[in-house]
Image (cartoon, rainbow, N blue to C red):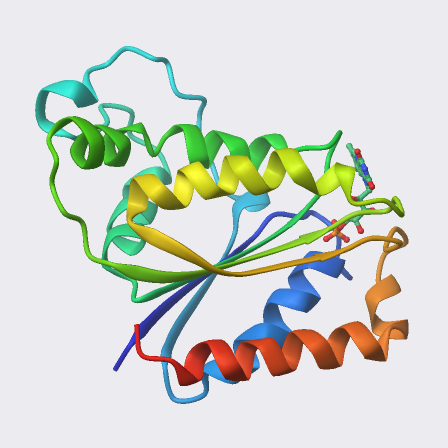
Length: 187
Ligand SMILES: Cc1cc2nc3c(=O)[nH]c(=O)nc-3n(C[C@H](O)[C@H](O)[C@H](O)COP(=O)(O)O)c2cc1C
């Protein structure tokens, strides 16, 4: 059964990004789906010690130990984040930075990690498109280090209040359809 790893990052009960992740994942019926809230886990900042440049493993022991195999073995990775100061929330950025072992293995050791299909959903309060640019590139280089293709990128502004997305049937429908299409393609 194909494995799907879904990530969001919000402390809100009625999180907009979590809701959109869930609507997207409805398309993964019958798949082995795991969802992680990056805001609720214990992941310290990357120390830049380069210990992972020895054997491709991080020396810090925290919740990343559970995430590493998931990020490596999934067939589909779906990430849904809010915009915080034009970038990803710091808890999500900590997870991204701690993927330096994957970067080392992919680009220094030239290991070919398992190919995965990827989707990135981004929500913010503002109305323009600029606020999504930094997160897009950050997640794109993260995906590159994991050998995840950026097959779908969805971004929605004008979503601020908790649960605001539940009043936007147009967005819910679009995300649901995108999820069906995404999971209908083989990883
Ligand atoms: C610390 C913080 C920084 C934020 N920075 C931005 C921003 O730069 N641009 C923007 O459009 N929205 C910004 N927002 C608004 C959130 O992106 C928005 O409320 C989003 O819907 C939250 O998603 P969630 O419900 O999944 O937590 C910020 C919110 C917080 C708490």
